[in-house]
Amino acid sequence: MRRALGGLLLAGVLGGCSVDFQGWAGMKDQPKGLPFRENAFFADGRTMREPPPDTVPRSRRGVSRRFLTGREAPDAGYVEELPLALTRELVEGGQGSYDIYCAACHGVLGDGVSPVARNMGLREPPSLVDLPEYEDGYVYAVISEGYGLMPGYAEKLTPTQRWAVVAYMRALRESQRARLEDVPAEARARLLQEGVP
Image (cartoon, rainbow, N blue to C red; front, side, top):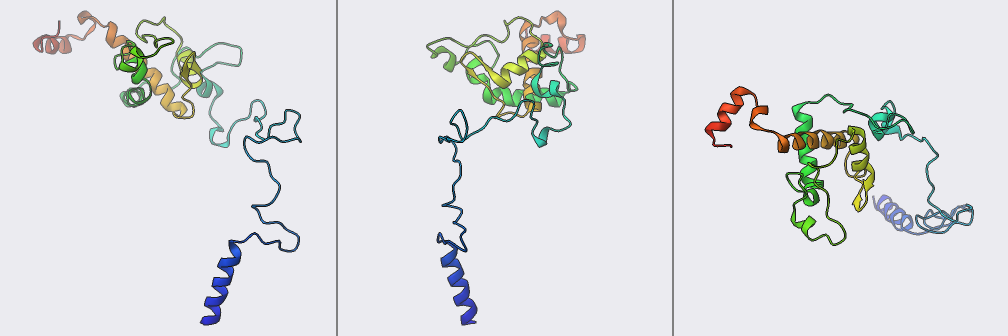
């Protein structure tokens, strides 16, 4: 029992040391490229490498390029409409993501009115309600890649979440432009009872 305990203790102590075992250096001491460090091996001197063009992560195999980029092809323009089925759940999910990532600058109503927008010195965020009618793929690409002072959100939102934000932005835009005549008759009666002009 003592011998096993002593062996276990010795293994634990030696495991924390940097030991040269049969010519092998410990992993801590081995030569390797560290992120953001120079590397004379590559012509540009960088350790961190760009993936080869058209590389697709394993997690995205089988998913179309137009779904991931919002573009029909590299030089063929943007996707006209959502590549997902437009459902209530999709729009509500888009609202949740919009409220977290977009509303701080673009406003809850998408009108560009928010405390953050009022305090931006260089340029206030635009009203999403007043923007021209862009293709859904273009809006998706802006959410993914950013535009002007706006950062891209591809690292924070999955492709499905970004498309959901596009769907919610369309619904938000329509809701801000809607007239009472556009509402179905049964809902119009309810709105009139509630005093909506």
